[in-house]
Image 1 (tube, rainbow, N blue to C red):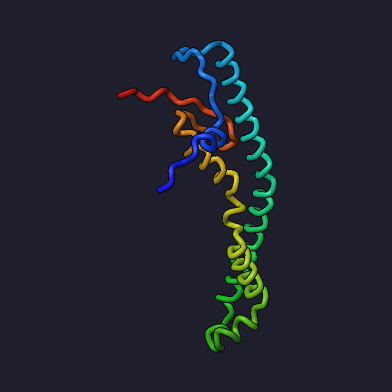
Image 2 (cartoon, rainbow, N blue to C red):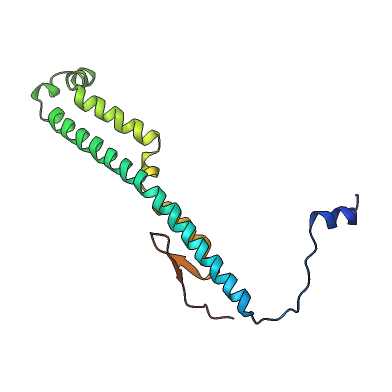
Length: 152
């Protein structure tokens, strides 16, 4: 077994200047922490806002295709000839329903269900990460500071 070369180890991990270690935050540290939190919140709201127009577009597309499929299904089911001919022939007789079903299936295969809810997925994942830091966020990306947990 080979032992690591100390000079390589020190090059990989930069040395940290040791300060007077205390549990009290100085005012400068507090201001920097607040600035970091505000910058993170601004970036998070920017990312979620950027996803909203695309999600709205895909919601509209999904609604339109779903309504077309429902209308086509209604016409297909109430056609008296559907019961007397084969399934494939009935689909050939109702191209509106067939095309809208194929389009709906293709959209789901391409991931429209993820694109519709993309902003809430981002917010949900951020909530999971922020819970470790005793914070949360709303659906628009605004940070929420939670009450401190009792220490054991």
